[in-house]
Length: 222
Length: 222
Image 1 (cartoon, rainbow over the protein chains, first blue to last red):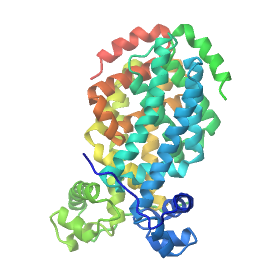
Image 2 (cartoon, each protein chain N blue to C red; image 1 turned 180 degrees about the vertical axis):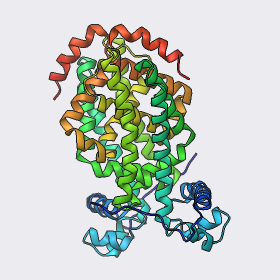
Image 3 (cartoon, rainbow over the protein chains, first blue to last red; image 1 turned 90 degrees about the horizontal axis):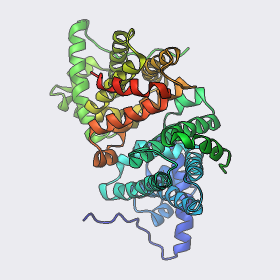
Image 4 (cartoon, each protein chain N blue to C red; image 1 turned 90 degrees about the vertical axis):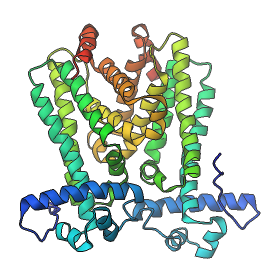
């Protein structure tokens, strides 16, 4: 079993630690995405957070720990929000639930483009046990989509043989909006991208007789 | 207009320069993917290429120039090979051509997983004019898929409203095999991944009456 990755602090005040770390995560993301992870040191991060290097070391043991919290916050935030959303939609038609979950997921990546791109580029810098924790949250996100797809098969709304792979495709197409913006942004707005990808996924998963339901579901997206 | 990105050499022997650079590109990819671009210096690259630092500087002016040639070779290689392949299939059914082009594209990324992952992580380190040249080759790849999709619409085999976006989706799903191997490899072999994604894309693009043609086309993939 791999050892758990921990973040060091010298403070016992949990609320303060959480608050300060959130501030540091927010400011460090800006500094890192501007200068690159490897080229940034703790002194520069402290400056970006408007605190002394000593104060920064009070809440984090290393640059690697800050990287970890940036990525862990981002993925676990998404996982929790999607799981909550899926719970809300548990009693509603799987097609409607799917459309809303896709929107929720893509919205996050549109609002956090730099973080998504940063995650693709820099997750490699984490030690294996830390990376596994990030992957764990990623798996939770995939599971949300897999479950709603499976529910749709059971309800006779979807006709797919591998919900796990479709779930993965949805996630990859959502990330792409942030990762490949050098290209996508030239041809589509976020709204058009979301609408067209949602259409594509619905075409992929729905049985013919449910195609009109699917159209209806899109209008019901919140 | 942006200035062209050039690679410096002190040699006039074009054949030798090409040969040596290919060797350096191959060995440096290994060193970079193992240690990370930022953490590797020219001395370590020279060692990985089994040559002196002086010899390395004979063929490249900087580490950045090596990075550029790695990424430029990779993307232009794919573009040329796909364009050639598309030409061969120009007179054949768009469905069959599409299936074969998807296979060709995904094969490349299966055979060059490290390079694909490396490209996603490190293209950011290139200056803008160099990055634009890489993006140019990427656009050529997208155009190959867009053209075959458009040909399929004209031939009545495909029913899609935005071939540009579907072309992009195909490319992203091909990359994903290399980029997200930590997850995909646990659930699918390459052959299964390719087969299922091809099925999905065909379902997405073909008109109902062409679904049986599509099945036939898959058997004709070379």
